[in-house]
Length: 231
Image (tube, rainbow, N blue to C red; front, top):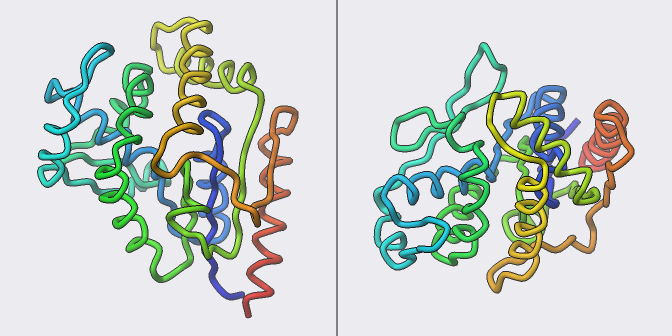
């Protein structure tokens, strides 16, 4: 079966990364979490004091982009690659609600998107890749053989995110998480540069009432069909 490019788009907290990891492991593909890349840039901006709830030094961030080095390094114990920012493992730090509250503002910056899209396209040049994020099927890989667009109700997504964060010991409230989900949706769908939209040839998967197993079986079937047709 010929290797293909699988692009997984969709709203925040729809389980894009979980599905992408499952597919990559099953198919023997490379997995790239583009959201982690934007989160890492956000963490850098926070560490440098360039962004907060009431402050964003966009021009200073743009000037500092050459100082940002991003890498995915495979962790054999976890079975997937972790995000490294300037040589430091930041996989845990980038998953906090504090980073979530700022990442959509960072992702609006055209210069940030251009830097990361270029890196992402290089990663996928040889196919055999599963990449998830907000504009993978429309901007990064518009010619991907399989495009999935994931959605679910804001309440469902907020509950999943709340459960995930509290399981990690973070002190958050459901209302704060829901507010973050709704706010990110608004920014992601209305930004001028590469707004979140469903590609015309993408398969929409509403997983509000689907188990992970049902969702995986559905998308794996689509991937196998696309791979067979590409021979």
